[in-house]
Length: 73
Image (cartoon, rainbow, N blue to C red):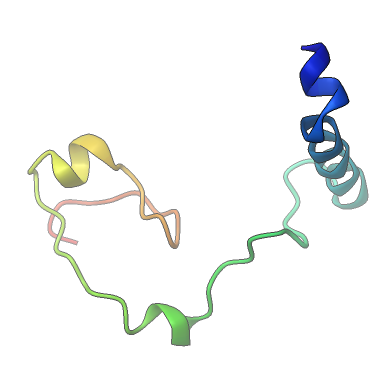
C-alpha cells in the first residue's frame, strides 16, 4: 500500500478524484481516453454475436461503445 501511495498510483488517484470533484460523481467529462468518433469506428470489422463462448461467454460488452452484446446483433 505504501508503494502505491508513493508511486504513480497516488497521482492517478488524485487526478481521478479531481475529475469527480469537478464534474460530480459519474459525470461525463474530459478523460485521457475519449471515445472514438464514428469515422474511426466505421471501418472496423463487423462481427455477428453468437452464443459461441468467444462472444457472450468471455466478453459481455463491446470494447468501443461499452454496450452489452445481444445474440444476433
